[in-house]
Every structure is written in structure tokens, then in C-alpha cells.
Length: 408
Image 1: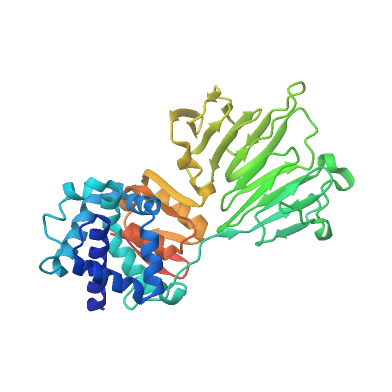
Image 2: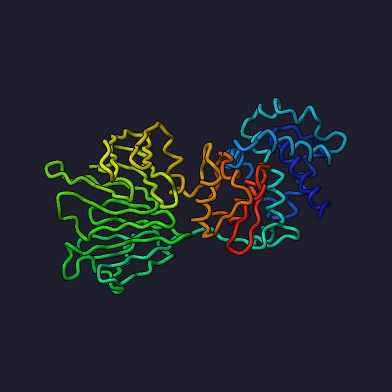
């Protein structure tokens, strides 16, 4: 096991130096031999050459302790490099930061290469590794949801589809497949008062197009309820969990405000793009605006707040606070990523819990307050996410069944 790990470290050193254009002829030949020896090696190397992916991987949880990670990488590299290979001078941070995205990636190359070869060789799903703290692995979430009609009938929506469309006369998937045969009749006997509920479980996501054309993306463990037809003076829906909205504009002559009501607040809008996170296990409800304008008010009747693009309102009890934000952080889940900036570990792990349908425990409550920044794919297996966080040196994880234990 140790010899294999040292080999992975050595190859990581060669790749790092290749990215910095520092390989000599013999080292370049050795790296080329490794690449052509296995298609998995070639695929990994091609991925590493993608600068955008390197930048994402290099940023992973850098706030936790990037310098420490770099020092660990340097220490491991120096243990196995030979004469004519990496020197201390070659590995000085000042030298590495000449190419910022390469330098950040160096901190994760060693882990990434070892993990890839140990867990993904031969194209299989991650397998158990002797001595691993992960007794099993868990696949990421997927497209899965239910749609409940006023009659109480529940339709399990297809995992092969990405969204469902409800209009005045019928229900269909967003590829046009009709759901009428499954009891998907939008109006029924009293369409004006029929209420639909679309719900995703833990580990699920789905898109819903409402009767007015508004497009909604539901995150894991989320639910919206809405009428089959918006016939009143407003378009009101109920939300628990998290959703991203692209609200359809109505006629200026007869405007119908779009209203999203959660347990703690109400958001009113005429036409805009925004995200609301209103999970019951989160202390605050957060509304993030990308386009247009929205009014945020509390259920207790406190003064309302008007948001402009790139602002976020945080509702806590009867208080609403507003700040400027990068909205891409709030909607990263919609684009298939976990993205954080100075985010407490407890918040990170709650998102992992919902998406992978796992339970989280901590051996020390202090660990919940550790801050992390970075971006990783939501479509990796959970072991890859946990291993990446572990590489910061701040925390460790034990995975047993559906239980993740966070340790120091």
C-alpha cells in the first residue's frame, strides 16, 4: 500500500512540474510512459489539462488551510523525489504562485490521483480500499419527484425526465410526453381551485413549469404548492425547502404579482429571477435576487425590504437584513455544483445530507464552525466530496451506511 501511494505521489509530482513547464527530458518520458500505459491515466491527464477544471479543483475548500495543504504536498513530494527532480527551490510557494491556478491545484493533485486510481480504475464505481474510513459509498442525487393532485392522487415523476409542465388543460413532461394517462389532468371538475403539490425527496431535484409559465427548479427535500390556474388578483404559491424561480411576466395592463410564501416570509414580484432557501432546519431564510426586483416581508408584519439584483435578504425571526452577494453562490446547486465562500462546515454538511440522503453527526460541536470555500461537482459520489474536504487537514470523516461522522 505504501509503495503504491509513493508511486502516486511521484506521478503527482511529475504532473505538477509538467504543468509548470519544469520537466527535463527523462521526466517527460517517464510521464508519457505512465499516460500511455492505461486509458484511465490518459483520461485523468486530459482532465487535468483543462484549466477551468483545475481552477475549480484548486479552489476546493482553500479557506480551510491551503498553506497547510501545500506544505503537506511539498513534504510528501520531497520524500520521494530523486536527484534532478523537484527541489525545495522548485516548490517554494512564490514560484508556484507564478501560475495561480496550477499552484492551487498542486494541493489536491496527490489526493486526486491516489483516489482516482484506487477507487475508479477500470471504470467502475468507487470500491472499498483496505483501511479506508468509508465502509461504503453513496451515489449523488438525481431527478426524482412526486406530483400530488387535489384528489390526493400522487404521480411519481419519471427519473428519466428533468421536469414537468402544468398548463390550463394538461400535464406533461418538459419533452412533451403527456401525463394524462397517469391521471395528470390539470383542471378536473373544479380546476380553478385544484391545488397541486410538487415535492422532491432528500437526494432529488426536479423542474416544474407553473400554469403561468413560471419556471421553478426544486432542490433536494423541497416542496411547492400552487393552483391549477392563477385566476385571482395574484399568483401565490407556498414553498418549503429551496427553489430557484424564473417568473413569467404578465400583462402590464392587468399585472398579477407573483407571491412566494414560506414559513418565515413572503416574497412579492412582478417578473424576475431569484432563489429562496427556506429549509426548516436552517436558522434563516435567504432570498437572493439575480434579475428584476422583489419585495421581502416577514410573516410578523415587519417593514418590507426591496431587493436589487445581486442582493440577498436574510430573514431571521422578525428581522430582515440585506447585503451585496455573488448570486452564483446561491444558485450553484441549480448548475450542479456545491460552491461555498467562508461557509461554516455545518451548512456544508447539511447540504451534503440533503443531496446524498445521509445523516450527519459530530464528535465535537466546535467542528461545525470551521469555515470552507471552494467548488465541487454535486454529481460526484460522496466519498469524493468527503475526501476532498479531508485533504484540507481540518476534519476527517467516517462513512458507515447512511451515517457520516465528522471528527478532528
